[in-house]
Image: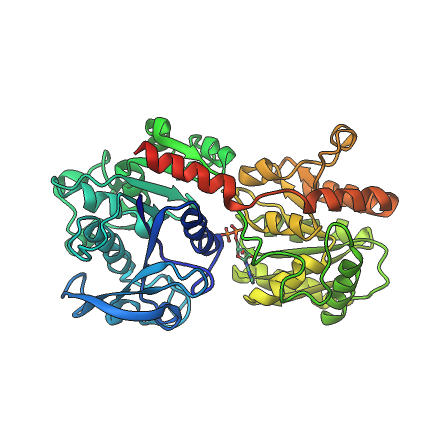
Length: 480
Ligand code: ADP
């Protein structure tokens, strides 16, 4: 069975978040099950540089405002899976963030850039671009590829089924209606039953309405997005399509994320945790934090946004410091939140440290060195960092929402007795609820040394590898 994955990011070439990790690891997991899998990617500079053996396959154009568009073929650097790359210099050869220009705003031609991505996926599906390899199913990821199912259904002779995966419903790919001059969607689809969203076009909605099947990245988020609270105005569409919607939990690539990985100072395992203490000390020293603190070392590896509850954390910080705990933050995001964390570090030297930036290797050192990883999200489709933390014996402290609720078992008398507990969970999205759980986590850390280690081992032995999830995707494809 031939499966084409279309996406805008892929680890390790272009990554702004969890989407890249999933697109980097799900296709190889499917290939290991015997499926014939390829990926389609936009030709950002890092894609063109990083894909091996890249050669032109077909010259197309001008289309979508680009004078020259060339479909190239090559291989992914690690898995060696076949990859198609769209080389459209006018649209994609721009350095930096794939979606945002140097002025901090979305590129004004994003509708054309990602319209082209969906259009190319549809034309690969039709066999016009590579007659040697025609997919049986096209799997499109997030709003960037949301037009894929529309372009496929616009060709009445084309019957290739599509799967559309929501990685984050908050990013809906909304553009003014007159962008359709560039996109060429048929008039029949420009209404509220189709791609229209309150007078605009939404690429996300297009994917939701026209895909054969919809998935999202955790069972709990699949339920949540059918409600107004989490639906971002699309909950009605989600309810209409509930019969075709399922939640399949993301997996972890344990070859990349493990406490013996190349970024770790002193490798350790569930059987021998000694190295973790050295990793903690090294992290404290790297950031000028005291190595004498009585409380645990909390870490954040995250976009610094209100989605991730980072404002709640800033507000709850006094509670954390009262417990003689420490906080180390790695992230970028909203200017106000970045400034808030910088200020917190400047007035609490030795106990709070912040790195505003994006650093893959440092994120591994955080996972290994911290005692507790904070993920106090307002909403969280799946969340990957808590899964990584578990495997490094760093107990997650998370809000009971989305995929966080599916993957972290709260520490309480009952779960401790059943030997199921893996982290700290709180309910309400408020500074008080977060602050209270932080305090309780600190008390537990101070008073339960041996229980802590037992939970660490339990956490490290959780299996969130891709095996089960890839099997679920395969079942979905076979059903189509
Ligand atoms: P989201 O995709 O919503 O940002 P996820 O938890 O699904 O959240 O995935 C985030 C991914 O991005 C993880 O791999 C995490 O380690 C990584 N990440 C987030 N911020 C940073 C950062 N500042 N530096 C390095 N990696 C980061």
